[in-house]
Image (cartoon, rainbow, N blue to C red):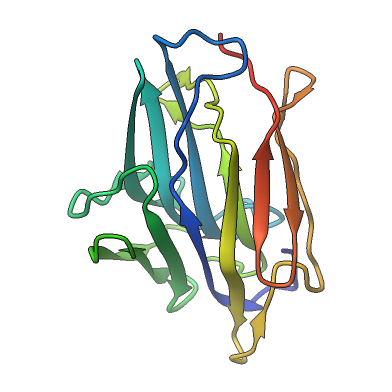
Amino acid sequence: MESPTNTYRSVTGTLVVPHLQPATGGAIEGIYGGSAWVGLDGMTCQTSLMATGIQFVYFNQTISANSWTEVYPNPAVNMSSMTVNAGDTVKLTLTATSTTTGTAVVENLSNGQSSTVGLTSPSPLCLANAEWIVEDFQEGTFLMPFANFGSITFTDASATTQSGSTVGPSGSGSHLINMVQSGLQFASARCAASSVTVDYLTSIPF
């Protein structure tokens, strides 16, 4: 979502951690991954980003997942105090307490665990973007082959404004951006009043 500077205060969404499959045409004995997250800024405001989400990996028919936070340009940090498994329902909430500080909360609604992390941004947030994202990720310089995640839906998806009102992902300023790599569209996104769904289409197994 795109709005004027200093619009958003928080963003939230709940998702089910996917049961992954290899990329289209990829070997069963291989490694693939992806990430689902919520964030503030990073789209039209590219100098800063606060985000929190779930990273998932398929490795030789075993699926693992972990929660993380990130404050751009610093690397993502794992939230090692909680366990996340495929099939778990996880609620993500990110709140900006100022233009340089915030809080990330990840709640595993399936096992009752949760983790809260305070965040500090080296660059002031614009608070102009709120987003719900499913994408590939890098490990160092290695771009992880995108896993077949099936479909991921952020339910109860909303953003809270500085004035305290709640807006849904299909509201004013909404944009749908689909992941394209090497000329191939990897995923297709759609939104409703309180949900965002991303469907896997294809990917390159490398």
